[in-house]
Length: 177
Image (cartoon, rainbow, N blue to C red):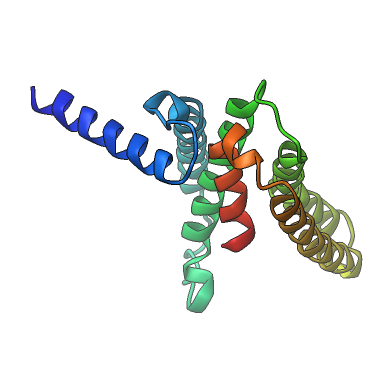
């Protein structure tokens, strides 16, 4: 019916786009694992938000203004991005690569939630949050250097676009975005 026609049209569009870029055909199966990890991440995020919303406040809940009002949405989008990149990493296993794109993705994931959690734990353990601030600055610098490393990988190994197109372009998006 209509759904299969749309699916075939989308499939032929992606195949034609991939051929014009000199890549292997991109199929719906290419996105199966990343889509599953995004769905799982969304479910975990929803459960976490429900638990936070159920907290019992003794006093009135403070009003959040300014940029802090947008932080929960931004954190949610970054969490979904991490879930997508984890899926891309899993999907790329077994694909031959010349560059260390998988290492770049794994390092980027390590510099995301685990690094933020480490800063949070350190700031709660100490009465003085100076150490947490220094760690946050160091991790920000490490993130910048990691993006430089990713740029180097992408520019030195452009042939990986043919071997693992989803991984290559997802890394490109991380570096350029």
